[in-house]
Length: 117
Image (cartoon, rainbow, N blue to C red):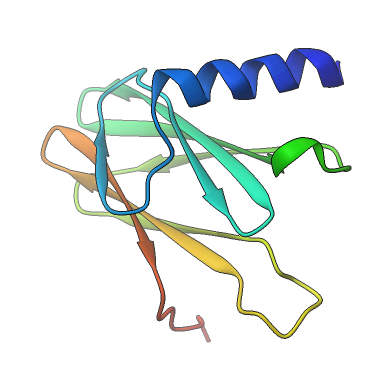
């Protein structure tokens, strides 16, 4: 199973280079991003104007730990945040913002995240 996930991560990395800035994904187009010590692979499917977003977070570079998969729904204009890496240390976690824009999914790494109350 771990070999299969490693192969999938490698395949996704080849399909879409790791982003440092904002990027735009289209339906069923995978993007792979590195947040701290974690690799995050994201894709979505569109059903009308509703996007079902799938994000898989796994240790980057062959680190230990099981991957975690998240599935969420975004309507036009809605956004979601994914934070990963550096937990348990003095470094802040790295955060990726996903925004349902016109006809795509915008992904941007953000530095100042306001915590929800």
